[in-house]
Image (cartoon, rainbow, N blue to C red; front, top):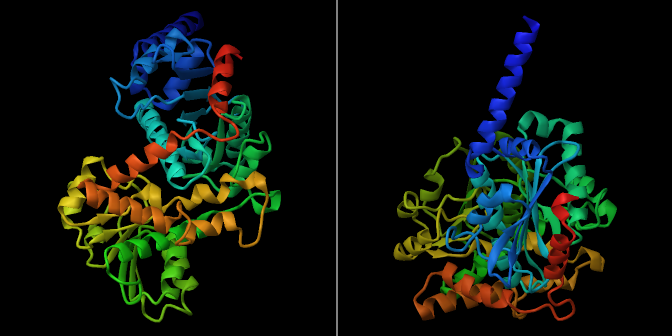
Length: 460
């Protein structure tokens, strides 16, 4: 009987392996993809763009589906990304990823996020879109950096919140970054905190946004929040609507960046701020933080998850400061504000929604323009620290060509003159800037990626 039971188990295991091999990679959950890699005795996977053949190349025939997925013809979100690198963490067994886009201006830079994904298609889309977004953001900000994004597929809240397991995830990511030889430089993003960045830093030098105690720039929320307010001021000025004094702002979200926005707005004599959040603790913290300077100007409201009524509240400026993908064909017609300017990434549901914003007479301040200060804050950590650092302060000036004020005016002016949307104008400008070659290290990251391929990184 025991032999029969063992045989049945063995048969089921073989059947499961065969099913994984027959299943589309894109439809797999990240955990299933990890199992697929293991069943083929593979630890790593890469998809790189070859300039000679003008097509993507993969590290193994087992990943040919990813090669087909990474083509301009088949996927509008694939824009000749120079490299997609995936690895199974040796300690945690989690899926680790790094996405690299257009490194003409320098090494790929961008945040590392820990996030749950339903399918590998969702995982890959996120990395492709966000890495390109970081490249455009850095180019608009005048940084000598390309587009990068680190994506870790969360193994679930229980494991991700277990201190020992979480530490292993980020130790793994540090080893992963080191193996890429500096093609991608990590930073802080969704689902992670500064202490996680410090853990990564234990295993690699290719990490930023580490704690100030370890020589890093720490939490970028303060600079990011001030940048959003600067973009608000520039937009009001461009539209001839004066200053922030007496204006009303509605914020979806009351987290770290939003609180900096509130603080700055209150100092600038804003008329009223109405902030909503799904998290009661965030609202309580916000209430306590501004108890002495509120004077009835800050209204806080808890709302259910997935609500959209915040977007329909009457105000001078609507500020999305929580999750992305909230400006879409369903919500845009309800918006009563004439300006949308906030810190959330990927606010638009799809590119066409920006045209819908314009058709409704709404001026949209492009997210990768106004929320740039997160990457700016940590991009140049290796150059040392200064009080009142001019490399940071120039982004808040009205004179520097790449400042938030100047670029906001340039984007809105270009959109008006050409009859296009602000997103189209921003992409046009950023795309042009992103092609500029680094004056000291031309094509260095491309050479690093070529070396990784030549040295058979995926088989190491």
